[in-house]
Image (cartoon, rainbow, N blue to C red):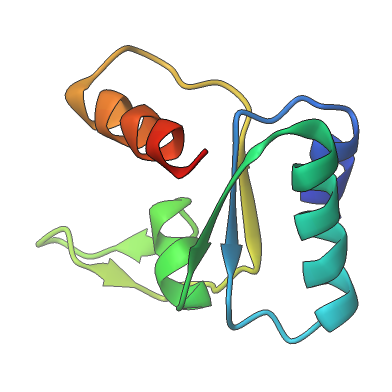
Amino acid sequence: HECAKALDKQQAQLCVLSASCNEPAYTKLVEALCAEHGINLMKVSDGKQLGEWAGLAKLDKEGAARKVIGCSCVVVKEWGEESQALTVLQDYFKSQK
């Protein structure tokens, strides 16, 4: 529910929503808040992968993710430093409008 709060307060730069979210009402809420406030929305198929990207995993000695916790939604409040990856992401969203 922290994601919905951040979206409602317009604190998000990006919202990533898992297609494996098993709460249709939550999915509709997140989609509606993103649309209402003009927040970029990206959908991914796997909640476990999203959890790993968000850092919800333990890493073993080789750096491989273990004990990954899945999640339904992640919000990026600040982009951080400028990078090529950020530019690619921003260009993608510009092309979608």
